Amino acid sequence: MGSFILRQSGQFLVTLLGVALLIFFLLRVLPGDIVAVKLMGDGITVSPEVLAAERARLGLDASIWVQLWNWITGLFTLNLGTSLWTERPVVQEIAERLPLTLELAVMSTVLGVIIALPLGIAAALTRGTLIDQGIRVSTVAGLSIPGFWLGLLVQTFLLSVFGWLPPVSSTSWASDPMGRFSQLIFPALVVGWRMSAMLSRMLRSSMLEVLQEDYIRTARAKGARPRAVIVHHAARNALLPTVTLVGLEFAFLLGGLTITEQVFSLNGVGRLLVQAVTQNDFMLIQGLVMLFAVTFILVNFFVEMLYAVLDPRIRVQR
Image (cartoon, rainbow, N blue to C red; front, side):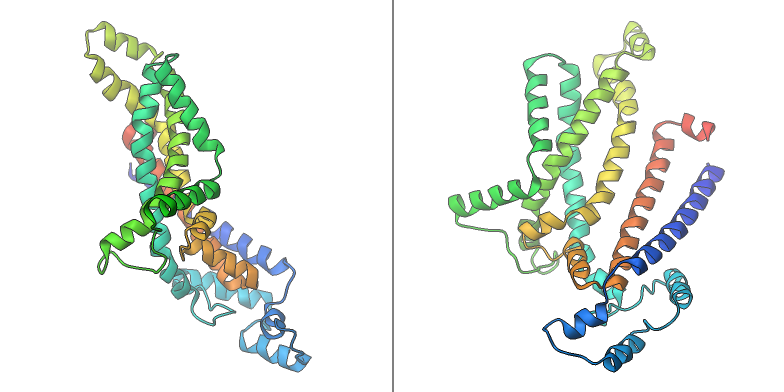
C-alpha cells in the first residue's frame, strides 16, 4: 500500500508541474493588455510612458523566464501573485470566495448521492417494470433540463407561491445558520438533481452488469439472503465506476458552478473567474485555473485510494 501511495504521489507532482507550465504559457500568448484595459477602459487617453510605468510597477516588464520562475517558486509557498486589477493577493481573493463554492459543491454532491443510490439500485432490481421506466424518465429529464432554466423556475415558484427568495447577502454558519442554509439549499438541489440523474444511470448500468456475474449466482445458490447479495456483493462492486463519476463531478463543480452562482446571485469562485476573464486579469485567472487543476488531481488521487479500499485486487495489480 505504501508503494502504491508513493507512485500516486509522484504522478500527482509531475502532473501538477505540467499543468502549472501549461497555464502560464497559454495565458501569456492570449491577446489583450490588462494595463491598457485598466487605464483606458473609460475612453481616457493615456500616454505610452504612463502605460510603461504601470507595467513596470506591476512587474509585467520582466522577462517571461523571470515571471515563470516567480510563478513556479510561488506555488511552493502558496504565493500566487497579486491580482492585476484589484492589486490584492490572489490567495486572498480566492479565499474569500472559495468557502461558499466549496459548501455548495459538497451539499450538491451529498444530495446527488443520496438521491442516486436508491434510484439506481431500484431501477436495476426492477428492470423493465414501470418503476424502472419512471426512474429512467426522471433521470433523462434531469440530464436534459438546463440548470440555469431550472434555477429560474425554482426562484419563480418560490416567489409566486411563498413570496420569498433565497437571501442574496452573504451570511455565515456561525452567525446565521438558517440564513446560510436557505441561501444554499435551493441551488444545491438544482445541481444535485442533475448529478443524481448521471449517478443513478451509471449505477443502474453497473448493477445490471454485476448481477450477471458468476459470483452473484454462486452466492444465491449457497442460500445467501437477497439483501446480503445486493448490499455486500453486488452494490460494492457496482459502486466502483460510480465513485469515479462522483469524484469527477465534485471536482468539476468547484469551477463549473458559474451559471448557478449567477442565477442565484452567489458570490463564489465561478463568478470570480468570469470577472477575471472579463478584466483580462491573467494573474487571477492562472491562480483560479491552478486551483481547479489541483482539485481535479487531488480528487483523482483520493478516488484511487478509495478504489484500493473497495477492491483490494487493485493494490495487488498496481
